[in-house]
Image (cartoon, rainbow, N blue to C red):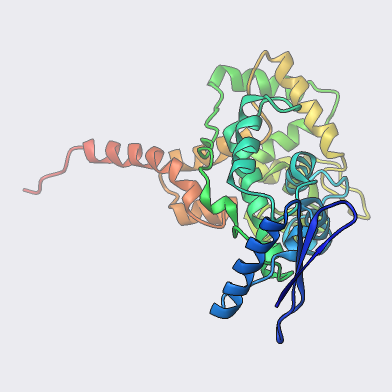
Length: 350
C-alpha cells in the first residue's frame, strides 16, 4: 500500500510497502506525480515484473567508474607502471563529462550529446577521431555491464549503448616507406646518439615485435641455438599470450652485436619514451612525416606477405595476432605473388 507525505520543502514523498518486497520510495514536486509513480510501481508488483531502480538512482557513473578501475580493470586489462593505459584514459574522459550523472539518468540523449561533442570538438577538449569515440563508447558499455552483471544494479533503460549509433571503425594504418625513405631513416638511426635505436628498429622490422615487446626482452629470453626470442610476460604483451618469436639471420646478427652484460638483464636497457623520442627525431632529420615506430610492425608483416611463402597462419605465429581478421589486409600482397605464378607458362610434355 502506498503512503504519501509532504516534506518541509513542499515536495511529496511516496512510500510503497509490500510483503516480500523491499520498501521503495521516491520524492516528487507534485503529489499527482507521486501518485502516478506509486500506481505504476504497484501495478508492476501485481504483474510480477517490478524491479527497483533506487540503487541506480543513488549511484553516479563516477562511482561505478571508480569501482570498475579498482575491482574489474586490474583482472582484465594490462597494467603499466606509469598508469598511462588506453583504457584508463577512456575512463577518465567518460568520468570527466558524465561522472556526475546517476546511472538511472543516463539515456540515449546524453550519450548522443557526448558522442557528437567529442567528434565535433564542441566539448571542452579537442576534437578526436571516430575510432577514439567508438572505443570510449564501448568502454562505457563495459562499465554499465559491470554495474548490471557484477554489482546487480538494475538500469531502468538497460545498457543504452546498444541503442545508439557508433562512429565508424577506423581504418588500419597502411603507411609504408619508399626505398628512398627507408634508406634515409636507417641512415639517421645509424647516426643517432642513442646507440640502441638502430638495433631496435632492425629487430622491429625483422621480427614484427611491438615496441613494448622488444623492451621486455631479457638476454635469458634469447635462444641462439633455436633462433627464438621468448616473450613470457603476459602483462607486457598486447593480447596477453606469451609466444616464441622466430629470429632471422639479420636479427641474430643484430643481437650478437649488442653489448651483453655477464649478469644478463634487458636486451634494450632503455626507457620506452627515450626510444620513442629517439625514433621520432630520426624521422624528423630524415624529413619523413606520418610514420611511427608501430608502423615498423606493418612493414615487417608486409615484407613477410610479399615473400609469398608464408601462410596467414604462419604470419600470425610470427606476429602474435590472436585472430586472423587483422591479417586479412595482407592477403592482397600474397595474391599478387600467386597471380605472378599463374602468368608463368606451363610446360607441355612431349
